[in-house]
Length: 362
Image (tube, rainbow, N blue to C red; front, side):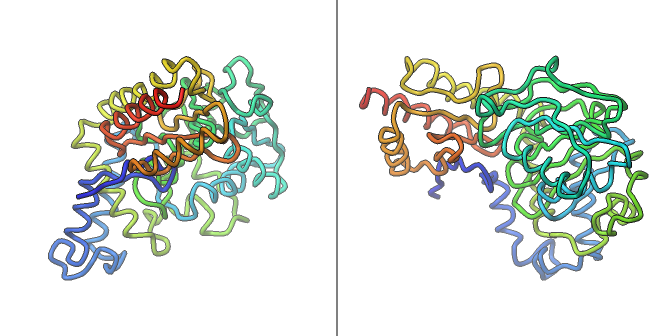
């Protein structure tokens, strides 16, 4: 079976084992005579999948009992609006750390809603090449929450340690690095993540939320935009994206089979090291965008000395079977997204290609 070296930033690689399992069960899921996509979301067969996905995530991330796992549609982008809608009471401020395009979009949505906002810190002046130090963060008692983006896909930066804030009202968009390493869940009021990078296909957003926050939803917020609506109905208030949740469950089973999040984290470090070493040992032929202490293990961004050379690199990489290495227009150059499902062998192949290309073009 021919498989591309898939370094797409999202939707991104899925484990081959998960795809083959879905293929096997596609037209007849567990002898129901139907695809999981055809099952009623109220049926026992589907509900078992739904509940297992929640249970597996709780086990893998060691989520305490005072948190709930919700499945919501609309991507992480909808959360940009739902968070201030539900959690900013009158007189409170939504405080945001700006580390890239997605945190910019998050604060923009809060402003559109007319909510008070502030910027705790920003790395925009240096084109988001770093994560602000904890000592740089400006927080205040009137903050309703502090919002961060844990990993920045476009710029290739990642938080290495998390801030501590009043009442642990830290909210994190972890769309691009959730499940890539163990997490101190108790440090957070809420974590949310679009599935299409480490959790499964696009179409489902996972929300890990502390239960006391569910009581803060305002009566003026429409039902389908309230977190307590999803909590009270086990995320089955309306028809969920059943196939996406089925695939999420399969990915979580796969992570469990790999040895859990700890084993995945070690593999991610090893994968990223291959490519970062190729950059660092290139004598400047490849130049990383992110500062070393902010480097992401999920999205590795780098440039070559000229646009012409970058185009040549990308074309030859494409010809060699590599997919998704184009950098975002905000940074240019190249980006390798090494999410959980990207095999070590793919990263090793990219490292070897980079060394070969450098020797031929230095």
